[in-house]
Image 1 (cartoon, rainbow, N blue to C red):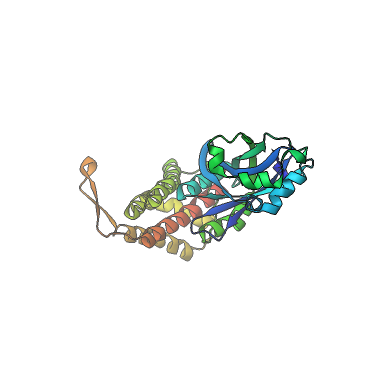
Image 2 (image 1 turned 45 degrees about the vertical axis):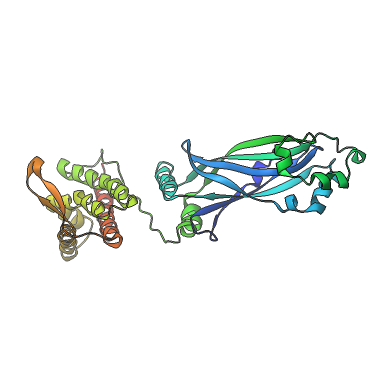
Length: 323
């Protein structure tokens, strides 16, 4: 038997509690001694890391006597068998997918391994007289008997490796909303500032603020809500370059009142975040004390606000001052 590569289709499922992908495909059977598939399985990998195991949905011909007999009667023909596989994605798997998308212009690149375990008859099916319906019914494809070494059958295996690319727009529009039952906003924040003509301390603080995004995400993924707020501090540090931010906004045709309001927003952001995380002591002896126990919505509010502040400043700097 051979897997038909072009037949593979991947789609998100809405019928599972956890995020799940469904893989549909087919394979051709050329061997006249083929009896039935015992199991379809496989795995999905990203960067050589297995993110999901593929579990088979049992095909109906395995449980249908009439269809099993038709396989015997049509043994000289090439037969096509379809399969359905499900892949449950953990939160870590979804995170790895998103991290990989950053390296691939938003696209998702899956490496997929498909496997099939099937039975072949030791009796020639080219001559129906050597095997009849009564014999098949007596054996009844009993897997327990097969596992004891039934001499009528031989277990065989077939595998196939292939790559599947899901474009960025499809992943965001068709997959993410179904897999997570949530809506997403995708930001494209510049990270390269080597050719930007701004004050070095301002450039450094922008880069540190951008790097803080991954630190906030790590805390968020582990449920450390106060940690998310603590890791947002580099965004607040941008206020040490208040004059540069003000000039940036004015150069971007933002009027003075709107510029002042934006600077006040960052200050208010600092005032709010500091209520959750307070530093006691100075220098190496300083300790972070949690004044308020943050909930998820508090952390995500700070995370999203910090992300928007970074996006505005980094994008405008990149646009206005790129050499």
